[in-house]
Image 1 (cartoon, rainbow, N blue to C red):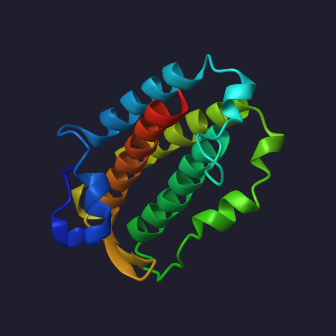
Image 2: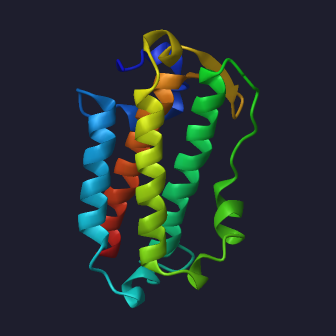
Length: 169
């Protein structure tokens, strides 16, 4: 799947897409999965519930946000790939975190969920040919292609893992 052109997504997403290395996006997604598992698998629950500042998300909430966002974007990619162009509503990330009850779960449960979700999404994106990857739909009031979504997912995860490394560990 080729890197999307800048006219295939809103300018806001360039911050994420520009950080994704060149090469096979599905390989990048798989490499991210391994790196995230290695980074977070040995942390204790007390660290997972920590916040680097008041009113900031806990590490669990950040990981849950990554999982929820990937799930929402993958659904959009599937719909666009199947020629359902939407429009689809925005994802209110603060509401997702507020109502997620994430402190009731273990860090391992989030890692397990992320692992299964990411593996499923890699298979999904691998199933799309070039024509499908160029299909466009509307979500959050902006147009985006299927392949842009794959890169947004990778860039979004990369962004939040950087924050975890710098602020939580």
